[in-house]
Image: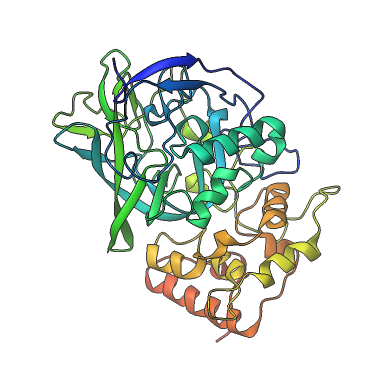
Length: 399
């Protein structure tokens, strides 16, 4: 028995209509977001109390105890194709590279993860919150197109509102944030099954530690025992007494991780993170895009940093695609995830560009925002980074 809870399998996973992988089609949603495919409908009847520690069991958290695929429960982190991933945007923890300390009873692990803000992806089969899982499966089954839009799936809203867990600082998902520094690869341990940390949608608590602009946070990832793959090349499958953060895909993974992005590129991510290019003087909305620039500008001007008149859409665009400094990006972006950005995402997807909708639609920032952009640009230059102002002459701010 490979599962860490007692189970009597009820109905094994069915496959329904498409769910986005790290990209989408051109049907009005975020171009680089996953498209809805294979929505699981499996259920399982537990026959014993789950032995995972809190917050998973023994409290108010609604642990997802469904067999989300035929290969295991949600914490097995199984994906059957890139189309199992849902696109979100906001703060998240990246545990993809983590080497974790396993608890004495072998049920959970303490994983050092990165904290970041921006495009990220949730594997639908690995949603640990049962309420969020059921709502997401229901919506994406009834209206697959709605799950092709960034932050369109219910799980994204739950994460961004802080409703997924009652006391987590961040929740672990997946993003390409560290790919330029730690290239994504593959070590296939399918023939050497063993315990691994299933970190997708795991809770992260405790202090955030920042060193040279890189932030780390610790996440509690359940342990699952079975076949798995690691996300880097040349690792040892046997990591005892530690456990790698890992997942399992019984099908072949693409050799180039950016091939996951079926739309070609991810808006609001730098090009070296599978992102779309920045704005240039020739970047325009294509004819017939259906984008309403008045609505785009309303989304920019209406989303304010708490307690200020600073418009977060502008300040985030000025940093997110050009800086890797956690404090700088969080200062510029945090809070944006709570706002409606749907028309901004639509504009950037239509034009295949990143951090660019305000330029496409000629949106004007207020005085406080212009001053903040000027400050953020100066901070990037001090760090040896190049802001958009110095690349394309936009988002320069005013002193």
